[in-house]
Amino acid sequence: MGAGMGTSDAVDGESALISAVRAGDTALVKSLLREDSDPDMWDAAFCLAVRMRAGGLAQLMLQYGADVGRCGPVELLSLREAVDSGSPALVEALLDDRIQGRYRYPVSELSEMRDLARRWHEAGVEAELRRRTGSQDALVRTRVEDDEYYSVDEFTLGRMTVRDGHGAILTHLEELLGVHTSFEELMARALGHDQHHSAWGSATVRLAGRRDQAIWSAAAALRTHADPSYRLFGAEVLRLTHLFDDSDEDAFAGPALDIFTDWSVKEADLAVLTEVLVALGEHADPRADAALLAYAGHPDPRVRGAVARGVGTWSESPAFSDDVREALLVLMTDVDTAVRRDACLTVGQGGDRGPVLANAMAALLDDVDRQVQVAAVQGLALHDDERCVEAARRLGPPQPGFLAEEYYLDAAWRYEWRRDGR
Image (cartoon, rainbow, N blue to C red; front, top):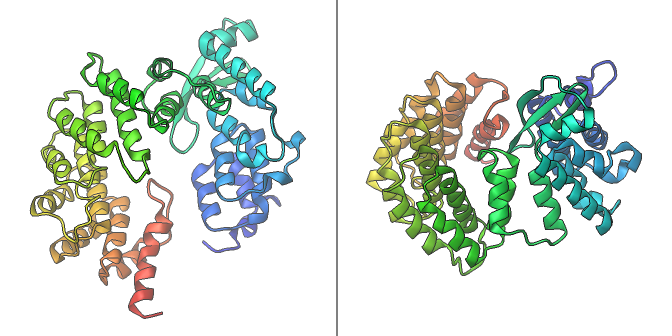
């Protein structure tokens, strides 16, 4: 994929990036942006994404440096239209500091938009859509990705389509206005949805970001709740509180390790257990590894995947322990593709340069799944193993998928650069 493809791949005189945004092709947009194919089009692509109510794509343009100052106010949606759309990603794109610095919204407007989001949230999208349209026709409901991390439900009634992210929008606007929403209210917004919904994510991220002892205690108390969704919410708040704590004291590290180590031997719900194991994988401590290793042979691939991603990853030791090495060797041959891939990534990015691990990664170069092969190429390159070069050539150009293949396959090129002393 060359540096000039943004213009050479133009369709009917339109740049490749604009065409990809218009088609809503997120994978192609990411690929074009990573290639710096047509930087001059980023600003126009941002404006187009906003007009299309494609908030996730608009956020991508901002991440890659779109100059929003080149978009006039008439080229963007109003904040009211964005809130009405129910897309948290779209609202957050319009509230980005780079836009705020040029078209700053007054507090009165932000307060009005907060109240609008609350009305949508409290009424529910279906009821509000029926009130606005007066229609009793059948409602079409689909799950859609709203941004890179979270999804929402999208409702269509007649010609009107709205997403149900108003709870997340409300949470974001409250934060901008300095409103201290209670733990209980934010939890209620989250629990109306699943863990992958924007309302859930915005609630847990905001609570964790406060790094508040009262919030910590409230979240910790949920680990004995009868409803697993409450336990899951509490586990995520605790995990993120420790993860976001970048202070020198790291006051939550010890309590988090104690809680999650004990929790891991008692939790029966698979989703909650997986979250607990992910949390343990964020601790550089032998106790965390021991707790994870206890589940290396669990029948559910989500649980084994959490082990594959977390075991040994935070240790500063140049080598894995014998138990960790043995578990990873087994997980690299797992029947589940994602588990094999994640175990390979852990081995490749770890500090253990033992030949048995390199040979295990080399065996995955012939895996039936391309993503596993890509992970093996990167791992071997990081281990300065010559076998990555030919394997990368066999794989050919990067393809869209779970991994950002350009980055992983470039590891082989970087190895060759080091090898040849360039």
